[in-house]
Image (cartoon, rainbow, N blue to C red; front, side):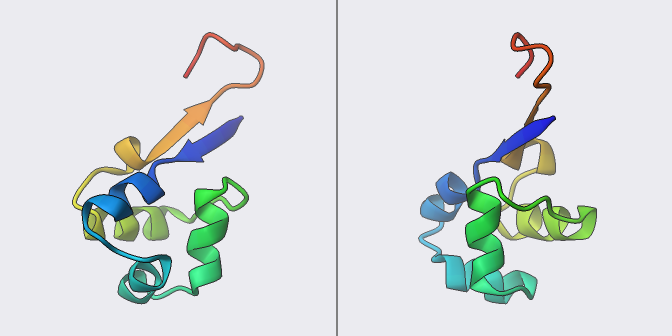
Length: 73
């Protein structure tokens, strides 16, 4: 299973840099970078914290895709 995120899109809505978001959720900027590139799977707590700061839900931020079934999004 792979996933992609909409963190960058939501950050732009609130004019937040990666550094701004990282400070608000207590992680390093690189963590946000890796999340946006889909190279890091966040903990449930981190996903929730990011969603809270970006005023959305975890489901809206993270899109999971089953690699075995390309029809699923």
